[in-house]
Length: 131
Image 1 (cartoon, rainbow, N blue to C red):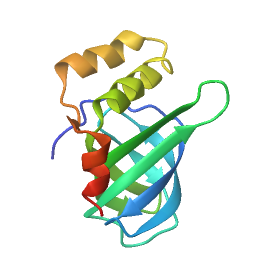
Image 2: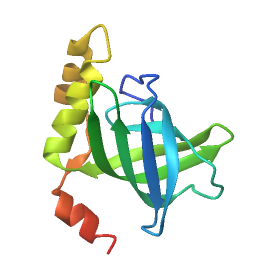
Image 3: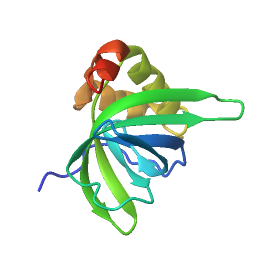
Image 4: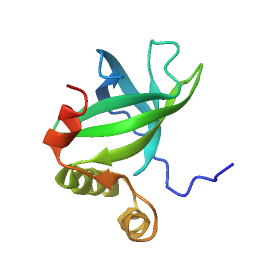
C-alpha cells in the first residue's frame, strides 16, 4: 500500500460532491491535503467513482475551488477522494490557502515542489467532461 506523502490538515471546508456527473450532494472536509482528503457525506456506495468536488469557505478569507477526483474508499467516517485534476489558477490558490492554515507554510510549498500533485486542466475542459 502506498504511504501518504502529503501533510493532512484537519480543516472544515464546505462543498458539493457530484458523483459520475449526476447529482450534487452537500459535503464537508474532515481533513485535506494537496492531493486528496476525507469528506463527510450522507451517501452510500460512493467508492470507486469519478467525481467533481466544489469546495468553498466563507468569512474574511473567501476561497473556492473545483476539483476533478476519484473516490478511493468509503467508510463510516465518509469517503476518501484522490484529487486528479484542477485548473492551474485554482490549484495555486488552493495551495496558498492551505499554506496560510499551517504554522509552517514552507511545508506546503515544499510538498508542491517535491511531490506529486493533481494534473492541471482548464475549467471548461473539466466541466465539459461531465456534459
